[in-house]
Image 1: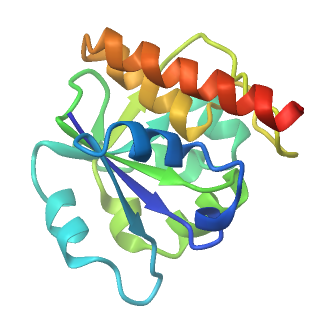
Image 2: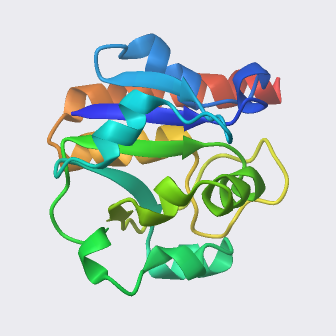
Length: 171
């Protein structure tokens, strides 16, 4: 499984960025591309055109709460993957507000195939304001994806690293 973190430029320097945990622990599975509104990464654009790549998206209920419902399903339902998890997933690594802007300002993200992550777990991430009920932070999404892919050891290691980050941040 390959995970591309399409990261908002402000997110890179935030000490509460959970995507960095996955990049540090599993660089063979996770890489970062900095989102650029005017000059999107060509490799990313080409990957999103392939059959085995999709944009990770919250399920309909969370998308509604996050203000992403208008792009969760397109008129052409072929762009929405609901059951089959692709090998390459693009995750928007940003605050919910920044993620909305990234999608609105990037037609290629609106048009990308989407894979809905459905999980009943509640987020443990409480280091920022304005979190979306039912929404997961970046590393929690990666942990859930690893579990789906039967990469249980990898998921457990990330969960431990995430718990350590939360403990250290709380002091």
